[in-house]
Image 1 (spheres, one colour):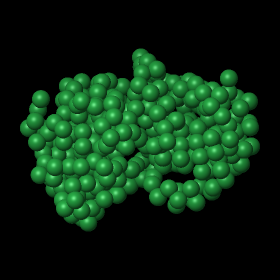
Image 2 (tube, rainbow, N blue to C red):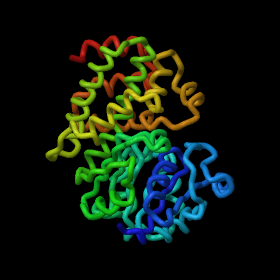
Image 3 (tube, rainbow, N blue to C red):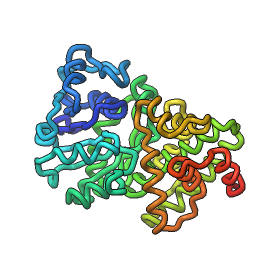
Image 4 (cartoon, helix red, strand yellow):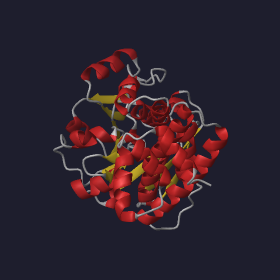
Length: 331
């Protein structure tokens, strides 16, 4: 194991906190960038994140904490971004250090709103990072269960298999199992799309649809995801693997899923604005559905579920009416 590998996590939310916890099991020191100086001071004093996963305690002597993003970029060989996609571009704009010789893994399950690109494509096009230096960390895995040390599975995707293997080694542990993949585009699109389908599952629940309909919705969602990803990046992949189907199921069904929670509120009659204000957390699917819908004007995949969620979230159409129409499209 490469204990000398310098790894830094960028982000202060629940998923960033969970990744730091995983890395802390294997590395002597873990870099952790957070924007909030007060949160850093709190962690140093109280040994846990004040706002997220407060049950996860840290040995603070293991943590190299900083609110200076360039200091953290200089420190690390491997950068793991777990910043909500809505804030990624503003954080990246602060970086003046050269990123081209760094290995960058995205743990962000969404689209960069300003460019409409998945994170890997954004890093490649906007920051000239070679694709072989870009990777993806995907589930099925909820941060809350990592905090409770419940058995969880991750997929680490990278064109360079050795880089994926190294990161897999320093994240794996008694309660974390990792597999590696070379489908960086497909796994990242799957991680983005499953958030949209989780919103759909939440809307259905909020409207009063039962488990029977949810099962039909999820089975149609995985077929829709398969068709969409095939249009974007055609290669041999098994859509039933955990990085695709597994991540979809846990996000669609789990009570920890903020996208499902967001959809549930819409189904119960909340406006988008009211739901987002009450949640006080970012539902990545809100941004993803707009980008996925607009990208599909080029790809032209058959996407009745994405279309229905887009109509509800962005065109403010009736959830009840949209799902009545959707039920006629599912089988």
